Image (cartoon, rainbow, N blue to C red; front, side, top):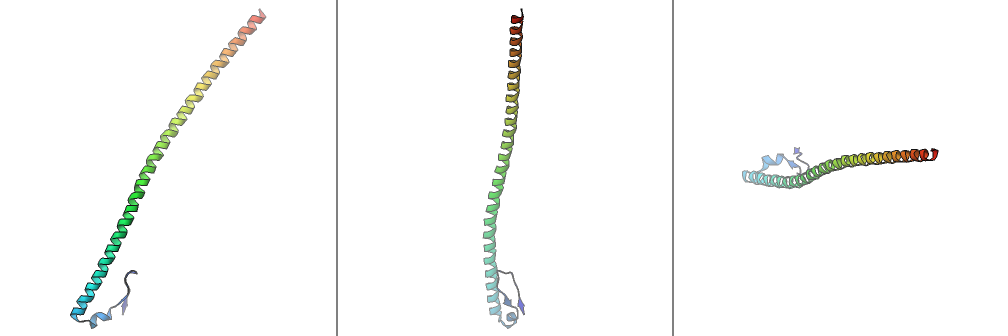
Length: 113
């Protein structure tokens, strides 16, 4: 009877166990144990590799969120500055219009008298 293990581990034949002597069985178990330990090491290295990538991506995400917040603040400040400039321009234009209107009125009064 063949037993399927993890895809990274080759198949093994369970019937071999009964045919093995005690020493052979122990030797076979030691071999399987060594293979399991190797797989654990590989899995551990892969985990460390991916954990490093996850940490890097987490840091990048935090930096992106911070930059997004900074951009949002800059945008709000820019909008406020734009409104301030617009209001200042409107006040100046209104002042200029009032001045011109008074000047025109004065000129009209001077010519009419």
